[in-house]
Length: 414
Figure 1 (cartoon, rainbow, N blue to C red):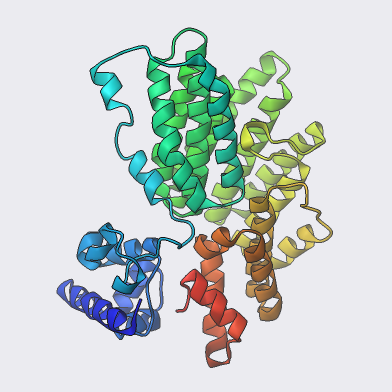
Figure 2: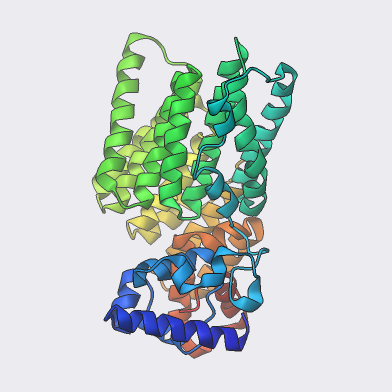
């Protein structure tokens, strides 16, 4: 965004704020920023290039995105103040795809024209989608889903016989990946929709465990929405149902992975509401399940195993403000067997822990290491950006060039 574009945008923000009869402090509180940040935006000093921040600001001002930034609906590019097409973490194309029905023509005129020999190709594409999701490569993921989801939705309506459940299983897995990606980008409403579609597709595939995996994804969407009662209800209901099933017959290892993951999801819910005792209880239950499995697994792309449980234990400890405990858990923890996203998540949470302990040099080092592994995660995750913003506030004018550069990349300057 040019300096002239920043000033014009800032003037628009100021005018919309005054129309809403909001002070800079009130707007800042509504969007989780500082009054200084709002002031810098209005004066044209602080650029706002990220689409998610533009949406946040528009919501705080109570106006549609097009009113705040008319060019954002198009693809005009950085000189007009819109999000650059090269900006990472852009799931807009995927969001558009799920905003309507992807196979209306087939609904209107039912037909059977699916080629069964395409199933292996679709399966490979779904595996690639999960690879992009685990790597937090959201721009590539969005592009891939732009064509894959409509193909799968059409196939689910045109395939026949034994092929149709296979397609529904692939569709469920794809929506699960999309739900996970939307959660990480803080697009919780879209994550809710994707998770709900994943549950429905798994049911149609007669994939019983896949339904529970969809509930796991739904729980994370509720957490992002801060609907903690709904998140707890979803996870606890799923766990109770699986517990009754386990009493009747010995569960397979895949079911144990789902059970352990739901315990971790419930631990996250309790941590977000500050219930330390309940959080630790769920972490211990997850540890027990992981110890029974004994190895790292990736059933349903959940990455459940002993190591991932500890990564989650670090994260929930940080959420509870127990930085020392988080650092102790992470000591000598080898996460090389996990995905890039899990590795970067641990480093990000260690950065947050160091921020809590006012160890700013260590915090910056961990955040930069996380960014080197999964740039999109650090530049878009709300917790990472919060930690970077706090580092900037504490450093003030003494902020190092490395910190300033990271804050600019993350749109966390104020």
